[in-house]
Structures are given as C-alpha cells and as structure tokens.
Length: 62
Length: 291
Image 1 (cartoon, rainbow over the protein chains, first blue to last red):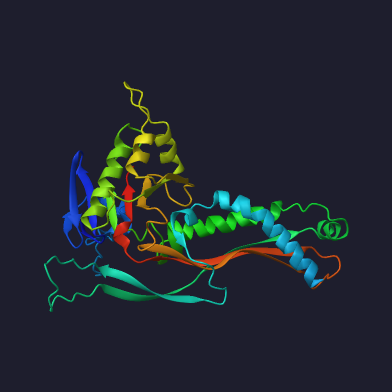
Image 2 (spheres, chains in turn orange, cyan):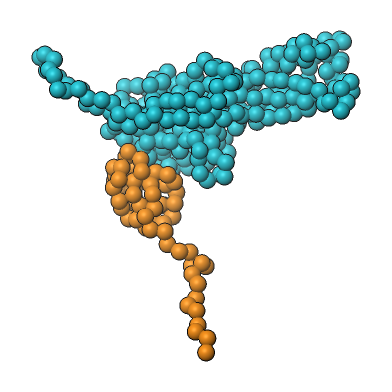
C-alpha cells in the first residue's frame, strides 16, 4: 500500500539490509503488514477493502 | 475529626513517596515543572514547528530577521487517580494507639496511579484506545527508525542507537554531543542486557550506554510500551527545551468517611496526581520500531 511520511524522517528497511530514509511528505510503497506497524509515523493513502467485507454483486429481480 | 484524617493522609502519603519514586519511569525521562496547583485545568504552550538557520558575517546587517515559527497550543490537563478503602478498625487503632498503618492498599492504588501517569507520559492519553487526545513521547515522536533490528542479535541495539541519532542530527538536534536516554519494553531490555558477543565475549549494554553520552537505558512494562518498540530522547535536563511535564498536582492522598455509617464505616481513600506532557520540538524524540 502507498503511505505518506508524517514524521520528520523515517528510516526503514523494506528490503532486508537496505536502509532508506524518507522525509516528511514523501510517498512510498510499503508492504501492508509493515505499514500498519508504522502507526502515526505514516498516513495510509490506499485503504484496501478486507476480503470478508467485499459484497457479491446484486442480482436483478425478474 | 478532620485534623485526624488529614494527619492520617499525610502519614500514608509519607509511606508512599519512596515506593512510587522507584517505579515511576515517566517523570525520570522528562523535566518536571514545580506543581502549579490543582485548580489549573488547562495550559497554553508553544510548539516549535520550524527552526531558523543562523548567520555568519563580520558585522550585523539589516533584513535578516527570521522568526522561529511557534504554534500556540492549549491542552486540558488530565488527572490520574485511583480509589481504595481502609478498614475502619485499622484507622481507629492508629488514632488510639498510634499503631503502624498498613498502607498496602494505598501503595497498590499509588502503583496504579503511577502506571496510568507513565502511560500518559510515554504513550499519551486516549479515551477510545486508538485516537490520542494528548500525545506522549512515543506517539508524539518526530522521527522514526524502523529497521527490523532484533535486539536478540548482538550489534543490532548499537545499530538502532546510531540510526536514531543520525535522524535526530539531520533535524539539528545535537544527538552526538548530548546525554540521551533509551526506553525499552521489558523484553527488549532483557535481550540487550543478555547480549554477549559470541567470540569476544563483549557485552553490548556498556557500548550502548557509552553511545548515550551519559544517559541511561530504562525498562518499562509492555503495558506502557509494547514489545518491539523503543524510544531515544535527550535526558530530562538536556531535553528541557524540547519537552517537559507540566505538573499541577504532585502525588496526594486524601481520606474521607462514608456518610451512611459515620462512626463505623470504612474510610475511602484516593491517590491522585495531575499534569500534562508538553512536546515543544518533536524531532528531538526518535522512535525505534521493529526491534
């Protein structure tokens, strides 16, 4: 999911051993599980709908 | 009657001071103002949102005035408290014979009050468990070093401290030259304490402490700081310009009677304190997550 950095600087290693520093306002792609753990350090820009909340399409009545 | 109750409360309060001082971590991390009075229910304060750069020249020139951007904030001051009961016969026996007071209930209530205050200082104040009305040190941190450095592996705590200091320095906080504290949940503190290099036998904790420039490593319960999360911040004295704890009421004990049974009913007791954490410059605080 896409996230926007809220703190002044965020150092994160999305790929093991590769430390990247993002500045406030920068947007980057982050694995869902990791993004959720970042708490208020980021704002999640895309909020995917959980599979159990996806409604099946309605059928037309005849 | 009122005087006896007041004396009883003072006696219990005196027995509470040392145990509470030992378990209180939050107030050791921040500079605490003198108590301003319980009647103070809100406070105005300035948050520094931008630091201006300095100038160098061989003389002073006009037109270089630069304002530090300060956002004024008003916060309500929360009260942290816990009630308990004192058996009436114990109180009467203290009054007649001066029997030692069993202050176990009060100390237990005091622990709960301290724990609530620690949570407010370190995490923040929340009513629904998710959204914070007042940000604590962790929720209000202006930098985040989230680099999956498991403290169970030797060297990772050293890397985490170095990473956090690097982020603070990038914001103009002199982290290499000021005493810093590190706050860890009990699991990570235990891992760091037991971290020994496999070949040299070198302990990791002394190296980390040296990197903190005279600061210390504190352990807090995981109810206050969840596992895998930590904090690096200036010590209370060095951090005074960046954050402080605006205290309105220090730990106080009060007792009263139940009006239904004024002569035989148990005493009701209350331990309370009031204050609020003020973060003026959040970039001086760095979270370390994923540890």
